[in-house]
Length: 180
Image (cartoon, rainbow, N blue to C red; front, side, top):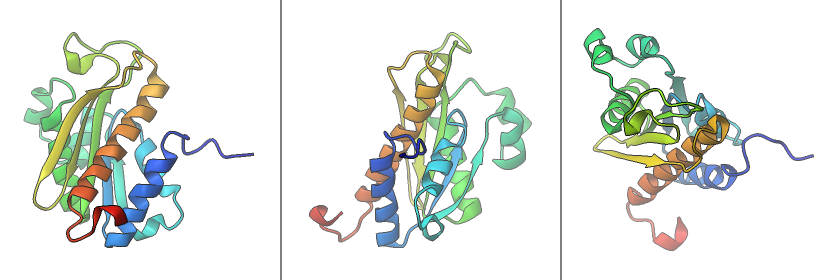
């Protein structure tokens, strides 16, 4: 019987990301909120993950972000929901803290209901960022899954891993496209 974890939609991208990280002798850390640890757990399910995985945090509450992600009371008081600035800040902080080559950060609204009236507070919205030493790539997306919490969580993970893969490939100095 095949394992149900990691979700089948993540397996191809996990294998590719792991291969690229090992090939380039690079590392990843993860700061996730609405994905609830799925990104980190999925990366750790790949045999040999200790070669590329530096660590991760599931920062589901605003209090956890104060304790572990460098947030202040002012940051918390000004928080208006997940967005590119939030995930960029989380990614920069954790990448520096763990000394990884990349940090993937995710924050979204998984559902089932809305947690506000803005776009960022509607189910299926996610903000993603990948920080490197020199730059941050961030984007906002919707999954099309509506209020399906579990499917949104998995899709947030897949979209984050896709952004990570694109960033690694973009940074693949000197590697020919056909070899990556």
